[in-house]
Length: 278
View (cartoon, rainbow, N blue to C red):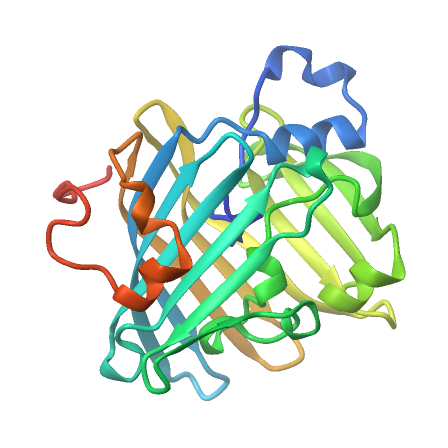
């Protein structure tokens, strides 16, 4: 969840740094590499609330367990939805190969109604993730070489000094997959968390904005605890709230496979969540 989930994650999504000491000497590519390669432990887990606000002011909440584990060749994620009843047992498996391998990120979705697992194709990644304002493309991890990026300045976001970077797709394939003709990103200079991201369509219209609303330090790692994405065209807004976030937990490899999302999350599969993450 990815730019939300690596720092949200940012893809989750919705991200932090490895070596902030040399930050001032970095260009835009170097900054985005640090965003991608941030230290977020060898594994982590969280209970996540996905909160959907429609344009009439109605709210729906979807709850899921989010697991992540690093491997020699990739980062792997699984998400198991638990409520409400209409999404119970829906599950996702995501694999983000290391960028140097030149391989595409892969996503699979399990639907209990059909008892089938399907791969989310590149052409489907513009679609809405579980009815939210986050797309499936937003769940992919930040890829530096997919964009031409320029450091355009520095600004403060929520009292944090940020780099401001503009990113444009490096190929028609990237544009086709995401639907974004330009991204503008505000990145915390100290920890490389993405504090804000603006998304523009092919006509140059600002269609949505992702904002980091709350940051916490968990196990010594700066972490996004609440992310919000507002869709200006649809008049909708979505939040991802990360609860009981824990790093470097013991997670079995069998939880990070396509078979795992068909099986679902069972009692005893993961350690007990702490009472509070803050």
